Image 1 (tube, rainbow, N blue to C red):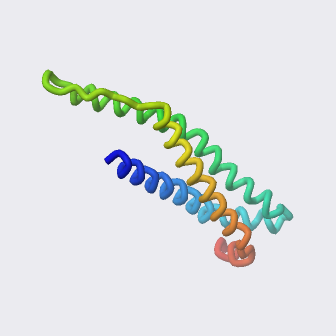
Image 2: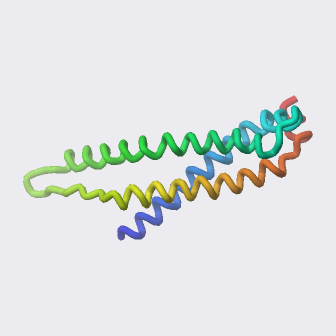
Image 3: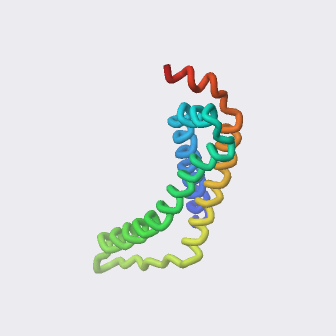
Length: 130
């Protein structure tokens, strides 16, 4: 059961990170095309968007882990009674796997988004803003 829940969590993590990257690209297509027209290279434009994604992941990982730890302990405390006591056992390996999964999802999303930035049609992107 633990393996199934882990796989389910990994799929959700990949979906959330990829969706975040795609939305950021869709919302900032006009700005990125404008930067390309002004002379920025593809690498510089990609670094702006992918740097934002990396900062978001770097901030969200420790915050999400701390909030998850707190939520688990709160739920255990709320479910505790005279008959049942659910021990909380979260190993460091669990946090490592979760972090690794999110980082891998971020890298994979970055590669896909970078390809889409490279294929960005500047004229079409700039016309959509008019």
